[in-house]
Length: 562
RNA sequence: CGGGGCGUGGCGCAGCCCGGUAGCGCGUCUGCUUUGGGAGCAGAAAGUCGGAGGUUCAAAUCCUCUCGCCCCGACCA
Image 1: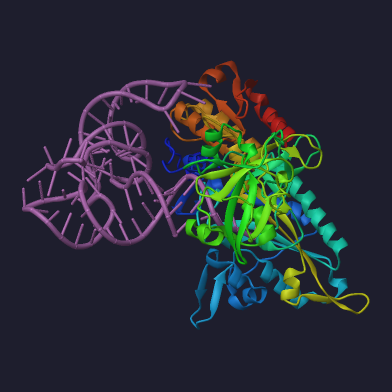
Image 2: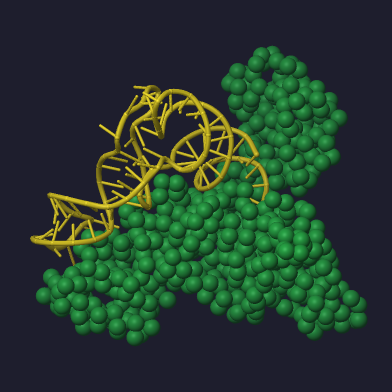
């Protein structure tokens, strides 16, 4: 392609409202434009990147025997009502009515529709297993779109669904996807972690996420360098360092106007790990007292696994349910349900005295109060790995894919059953597997850039080579550039020829910004010596090669990378 | 949904506190010069200040309402 004919509106300045590196560079590089909150236009360069990622995904999905289908974006409400998600999902689903007044919605995921299809056309164990996927636009009315293309209201997703006759079959389909995903991300040039994850609103029994390390990520994972344990902190198990057990007897201490852990620790000159933090939440079954050590953070998703949906209590709710003002709650003597973090099983602590202005020293869990124990603290760097005891580290990540074992949740609700060999009717066992191609692109930029712009992995770069004649008015330069361009295209590479009548500086700056892996620079000075320059974007290394050898050298570089 | 910030030529911003001629940089267009890391000079086009209402002789500036966008949190296949 010729640069002069491509629409690549690069910008010198980043948009002021962009925060994430990938967001700034995608806008500056002329890859995307924002139409409204969470709605993006993909310009030619962005489109090329997405096409490449999608091609890799399709190749690997096809390779494991998955078959591509196209699903409606507009769905009738009834099918979502049958699985109950019409009610449970809430505001995140775009809803509308057709002219006949029928409730409809825009597809935010496709379990229901895929299962509907399976229910209609998969009847016998002979039809199984099946794996179907789609690469289509999803719509979600996100509460807070953010970080460029990382969280949008409209986005393309590859999602596939597996249909098996038994759990062993599901294991196989799951494993096939897991391995395919590893290959996809590796081909896209990403660093990533495979971690255990929460099953969330999907339901189901097992789930993993593929996570690309980046400061722009919204998730945090806990990783053990020793045994390989890796999990989203939403469910990561960890053992916080235990404090030395102090030599205390049970006694009240006056702590006037000291409410927060921070205030009380300073007032009593103690470390926060000697405190019990008492947090009141309102669950569907009423108030629950959650207890974590003072240096720990309550993880609400972990807690939700034990008590279901809940929210923090208001100040007046605390007072009315426990009779104690906020800041002086202790776990002793309450009738409400009480969940204590496992790290509180041993030791002596300071806790609220259930009396304004007082705390109690020497509280012993199990003796002075009897809670249910559960892991409800957030895993933190430095905690011991629950598997092997070695220290965990944590990392901020972008979720680039996930895989779920769904089981029969959808097949039962939508009556997707088959007749097994023994003549009995059974629900199909399902799995669901997603990849967000835009997040893959954003993660690639987050992981590959410098102060001058993007550095694309070769496999998903919008072009593989950029040919730059420094001065297009110099006939010799332009002729050589055209020859090299034509020869590389002839060999099947994707080549961008910067034929613009611009100053060298402008071309070089744009070249760095859009991050094409290899650059061939043809200048008058070089040609006098019979050479052109071959520059690698990633390392910045420059090699002078004889004009006649230029094409072969580039080809060799590209082939090595592929 | 709670908290915070911001809407001024295409882009990035100043002006607003203390009402009175709308300004700067980049980009765009024309001409000349320049030509290996976002050129120089000269000239030009382009905004009615997110929108509505109000106060005032006079509103980008003050007041009220409203819409949009961003950030933090809540939420999130």
